[in-house]
Picture (cartoon, rainbow, N blue to C red):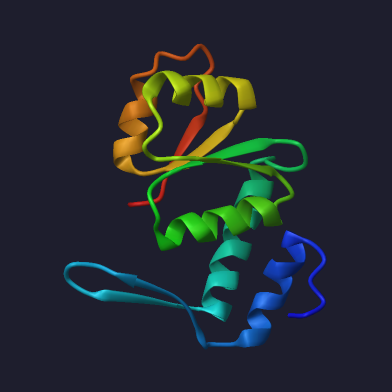
Length: 135
């Protein structure tokens, strides 16, 4: 991976590391393991889905969630689709959240059920489409 030039090239080179672990998520009941190849496969498939939904160059896609494996996968997918990632702190206040979403012009937001509830309560004129990471 020494020849990386862009974040998109990172997505292209992840499978070269094979099934070695890249992410480990500790949950109350179990442990979730992600390999380089698995992460790349999920991110590529999601990127294709975004492109099929006509998300691409210069489109803004927001991410509103606490640290989780799916956040990383969604971020890589947005980059893979050629869109602009708008990372938002899960602890941001509602007024700032509304301003960030409106100012960025995000057409999609990857979030959790909790985040979706917050966004739906913002009463935005043009609310972005919500994509849940925790279902």
